[in-house]
Image (cartoon, rainbow, N blue to C red; front, side, top):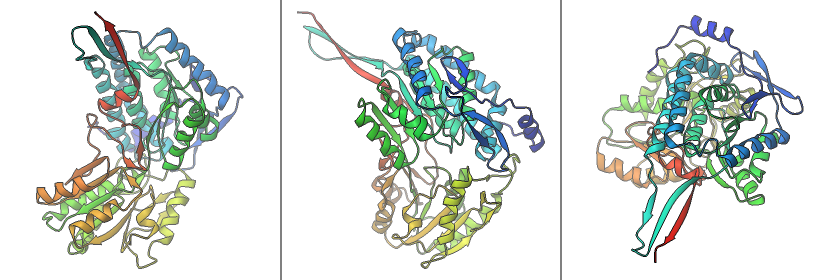
Length: 496
């Protein structure tokens, strides 16, 4: 884990930053074609950080043309696997040299606590790039058992130009999850960061080029969804799009693909994830620590957040008391202060959405047992709401904020039914002292990642993605992620 600096040191870094402001296309930082910009602000303070190039379809065309040219002449994918690996390892080393700068930039742009950026987001991003780099020359193609009269080779080839559309909640880490395997596969990229959080993607592009990734291979086109995201989704020369964000927007990318060139689409979308606490739990303090982390890490702005606590009725009161104790260590405030574990919402618009759930909390038989208040129209206290029924908005809809909904059950079958009573299926957790019941419930939860006696998403070696309306077409992370950025080709050689 990275060592933390003091608030004064982080502020000094922030004051000395030269923030990127232009698109990065074909190896150069360039203004938008129409000269337009949008304002980017620090959500925690309202301070204007700068003006960023507001790109549109014309810029997307330019970036895609650069990526297509890079793919056509093979300047990246035709290098030997070892050569590409060495470039990506240099890239990771450069990211590490600029780790404090990236952590501060991420915090300023998103309202995330700098402590989380410095100890989780940045080091995990670097580790992800290194891991996928090392995998490049360790994935083997194969032959099929066709007899002595022929040789049938089954080989992977890069799929072509890839569009990467990123969320605002983990801007740097989600970028790494996608560029690691796609660059390892040899694909040129056109990247759209979320408009709220563009800065680290632009800085990473500069460092990638410095590390030796050729011009045209990694392009970043900032701007809004309609102006940049949709043109990427509809572009006839984009061969694949990997998207992380809301389920509603994910649906649009499927439509764009159907209406254009049937490009491959991989979606990682929303979640309303259960944390099921079984009756046999004997260490409620540990459970409470994991539940609090799962619900409130990154201010609950996390698609895999444990936003529904489904607890056996006999344990509820004792567990809620321990959750209250755990929350004493979760300070809310200035993201530049490393003592604070909770920062601001990413924007005023998102704050208003989360507040709408708080305004309903305490109605329809619900009780706010922790938090429930806001500060400065941008900070939301970690909030626990008891008595949440399955037909309530708080049980069914993704808040994407620091709000934990509490529902009780009496039987194991009821717990499973409650856990699966959702359009989503991204993640889940099961807590129990006896392995067999815990594993039985984990197997029954319809979600892409289920943890037992902890909260988490696995690590870089394990695939991440969801069932139902939480995902489509593939997985981020692990060796499985490489497959989605490649085409499978059979080469048949007749020996008869």
